[in-house]
Structures are given as C-alpha cells and as structure tokens.
Image (cartoon, rainbow, N blue to C red; front, side, top):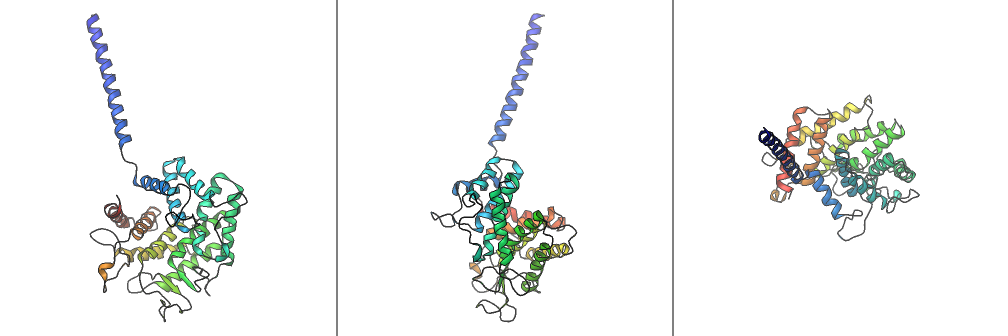
Length: 346
C-alpha cells in the first residue's frame, strides 16, 4: 500500500511539473513573439529622436508638424497598450518647447503658418492628462493664431502668410482637427460652422468632376505660376494631399457635435473621396502612386507612395470603424495595409 501511495504522489508531482513546464514554455513563446508593428515603429522613432524631433539629421530640433504626426501615432499606441513610456516620450518631446510660462520655443505665431498649429493636439493631450497650467497657456496661445490667420475671401485659411490666397489640402489636416478639439473643449460651438465651411469650400474648388479626385492646391487669386487661370487649381492629383484631407476629416469628426447640420456633409465628402481613391488603388500591391492617376510621359518615374498609402489606410479604417463609411470599404484598407507591410517594412 505504501508503495502504491508513493507512486500515486510521484505521478501527481510529475503532472504538476509537466504543467509548470508547459506553462513556462507558453510564457516564453509569448514573450518571444515580436511586438506589434505599431510599437516597433514607435520605438524606432523614439531611438532616432530621443529628445525632440529634428527635420534634418544632426540639425537642431524645430517646432514642426512632422513631430506632431509621429507623436499623434504614439499617443494612439499609448492609449491602446497603456505603456507609460509612450506618454512619457510625448511629454519629454513637447517639454523641449513648452516653457514654464506657457511660451513655446521656435513657434512664431505671426508667421501665420498653418503647419505650426498641428502640434497643439499634443499640448492639448498633456493638459488634459496633467492639468499643468503651462500647457493650457500654450494651447490658448496656439489657438489665438486662428483669430488673425489670413483667409481667402470666403473664409479659408491661407496655407502660410508668405503663400497668399492659397489653400492646400494638407492645411486642412494641420489646422482643423486641433481647431475642432479646442472648440469642443472650450464650448465654442460656432467654430464648427467655420470648420465645416472650410472643408466644404475646398472640396468644391479642387474636386475634378470627371475623376472625383482633388487637386493639391487652390489659388483664389489665380496668380501663381502653377495655378490654372480658370479654376485656380494646381496641375496634379497628389496622393498625399488627398491623404491629409481624408485624415483631417475623420480626426475632426471626433469632436463634431452629432447634431451639427453640416456633419452629414463632411461624411458625404469623405465617401466621395474614398470612392475616388478606391478606383486608383493598385490591384497588385494594394498601394497608391505618388501622382495618383498619372499615365503620361515619364510615368515610369512615378512610384508607390508610403505616406499616402498609410493615410488612406488610416482614414478608411477609421471611417469604417466610426460608421462614416460602408463596412465593405474595410477591404480597401486591409489590402493597402498588406501592401505597406510587403513593400516598405524591414
């Protein structure tokens, strides 16, 4: 009997050891799995720019929209995975610029460059999370730029003071989502009328009736060398410009009142844009060309554009998730995402 009891205990102990081993092996295999691509990309950026963003390698850090684009992506990763290192990196990067009195290093408000308002989104995040007064002063300062920013006769923000009468599609991304977020936070409801009007007017001026694509820029004065003398539009359909515009809409809509009378117009614009770019998605790779529909002389120099393809994937995926786009449109985003992985990741 004793021998049988001992055998039974030995078998139970062995079962426990096997269970512990199997669990340990599972844990090791899980930890050995590569991190999500989002985190890998973010950590590459964080290693490349450990303190703040430099446009030129080895050059001084500058207050530029590029940093805001990267940090906005890192904000999304922080919210998804809850790793404080991502938030800390955003704060460390912005604290390079935002001083204790709320003034901002290298930000020149009266240059009236719409690009320079983009980083306000990250300062807004820092204020919402920390409540620090310096961040509130900084976002208030950036927001005052819109009060005096030069406009077209019908109210569109010039891209820059040194680019008079010009509205570029990328400018809608640089200004409108921050403008909308601030308006919701400060309860400035009439601002949403202004934002909607700017989206609607630039589509009306730049949309090509035949293809549904949008020209990159519009010169109200029609004086620029690149401007069509009849329409004021630039010559080409630049994919990244349409990408900026699509991202601008899905991001600005995050803050739009659900009962705003023009909200449905913005969603209709987004649907028109997606229907147009869908027709120009490369069937083999799922990507988009830099000049999205170019088929003229020298077309072999046209190339698949990583940023534009990323922007379309983002705007479409978010548009489907938020219910702005039909659910079937997610296949466009999935095909584009697979193309990005195959073509550009290493």
